[in-house]
Length: 304
Image (cartoon, rainbow, N blue to C red; front, side, top):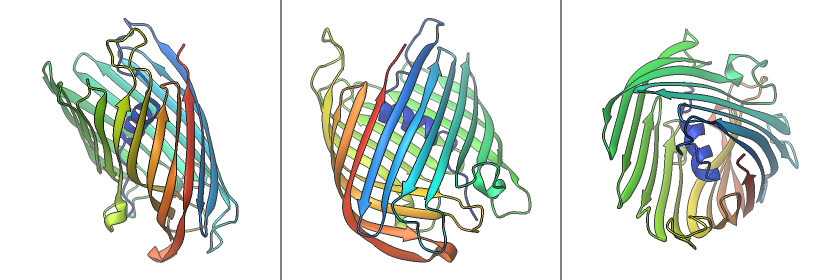
């Protein structure tokens, strides 16, 4: 059965990876954040380029994120999978008083949305914030998700859990709909910090755990005149690229591990490193090694 990726995964990864101040107090006004990115992955038997463009509109109670990604393979994957795919990700997050509503559409395919139920996932969930303390916030609820889940019905109920914790020692966020999504920052007010992001979209083997862990040094602290502007980090991650072809029953996946270095200037982030133990997954869960290589990732944004 194909499991629906966590509805809040897009929000977490976008906000953390691109440093968008989506939770900042904007005093009721909206901020506009255009984004762009480029990713290059070179493995022994798989080479891809990805270009991303989009943006966010963020206010005190409403956040909207929209991203489009075009991924091109230097040579098409085996099993007659297409050599290019599109990615569309839309998220609306409403947080008013203690009521929270999250709606998401995500499609990664050579024929996004129009290729059928198997080429997209969408969901709407509602939660109520039962705990709203100075450090701890907990919202619980549920909703409905629509996709090809391998079941008789394309519509299934999903839970909604959103947990936030903030202290001088730890900032943490945990979200769960059909899979857990966890992000951690140890010593968030210090220049040296430990960061971790973890998610599980499916439950087949160890490679379904997607993570990134890093040791970061911020050049300035949040008390300086320029703010918490720049930082450098060293880390390790497990990442994948996947899409659904309208002509195939199984998702194509390209997974790899990597050790990396990152330069973060808030408005511009550059990372790259050694990628190893690559693996491709095709029809009927057939897997083949993709070798080692490297990756480069560049992303930028600007707030208006």
